[in-house]
Image (cartoon, rainbow, N blue to C red; front, side, top):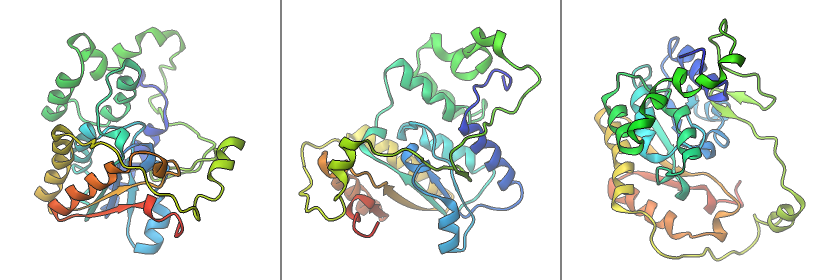
Length: 262
């Protein structure tokens, strides 16, 4: 199975997390999607907070399976604080084949023996997909001609900056984007508000993460990463997320309210 895994930076994350947690406890762990691992750099967090932190964000990782990542990480670390990045697009588990496939990079982090993993997989994947979900050997068997059978290390050398799960971004805005956002920190934008977006099922998925933290005496901070597009979209989501945090007695930081400070 290790031989047939696809080389990916999340293998760097898994490898680095295992190495660090074997040497010391990790005080702060970030969870979430690319908006987590592209935003929160443990190097900066540790410099300000005198902590040891790590970013376990995963590509397109959705909230319904983030509690599995949290649960698995607790086998090797006992953080004082768990920070989960949540935005509207991460609330629902995807239905299309490609995005369901991307979730496997996060699910591969979770032990085959996890009953909770099995329950989630049975809920979100068809029976014919199960072997592929659990076994990279079956998932990627058609690539056998191109596999290096002598290499179990599937981490990659990335030109971007990598540090404890954080992946630096070297992308630049194109001309059209740059023109639209160039004054984003000083514009007086009235955020758009529309229909409610967080369903009861969505709320339960968030509460599953919170409940796991409380069971292990871990504080939770919920955040929404800064996105220059957010004030042009439905801001009601952030209001609803804040209401859940108030209800649960948690702090919430919506970085989209702090463009000027950023």
